[in-house]
Image 1 (cartoon, rainbow, N blue to C red):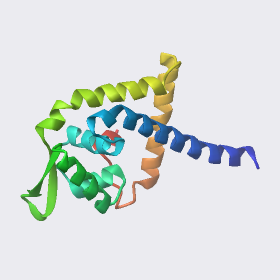
Image 2: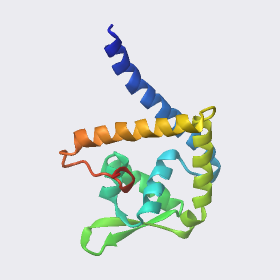
Image 3: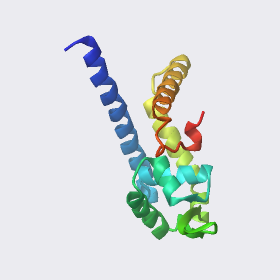
Amino acid sequence: MSDHDKVEKTVGLIFQHVARLRSRLFDQKLSPHGLTSAQVFALNYLIREDGLTQVELARYLGIGTVAVSGLIDRLEAAQWVVRKPDPRDRRSNRIWLLPAAEEKKQVLREAARAVNAATLSGFSPEEVDQLLSLMHRARRNLIDTMKDDPELVLPPSARK
């Protein structure tokens, strides 16, 4: 196997493994609050832009509309969000945060800080800056490659 082949296989595995481990740690930090990392990702998009449609949220999360519907069902049952018909399109629902979600923003921030601290433990500030710069570049490369995909809708945080 060539060095290039090794890099191609390693990069994907490392990205996936880091993302999976971060999600598992988020799950551990948030389980006392009845939340999973998938629910937190949805809540974070709603915190940034409350009132998203289910279709928009599904695209931002990179999951199907059926999966997002189940996710919203669980958040709604826990009284974190509420679905309301879209006044411009009655076939569509918009998702709105409820006061319980507003009250837990600090819990979400603390969990994110803990996961980031664990992830970056032992990194110098310069290394963190370099890592972020490289990750932003990798994300831009992927976005640029996919920009002609009509199904691709970029969340506000990825539009930079």
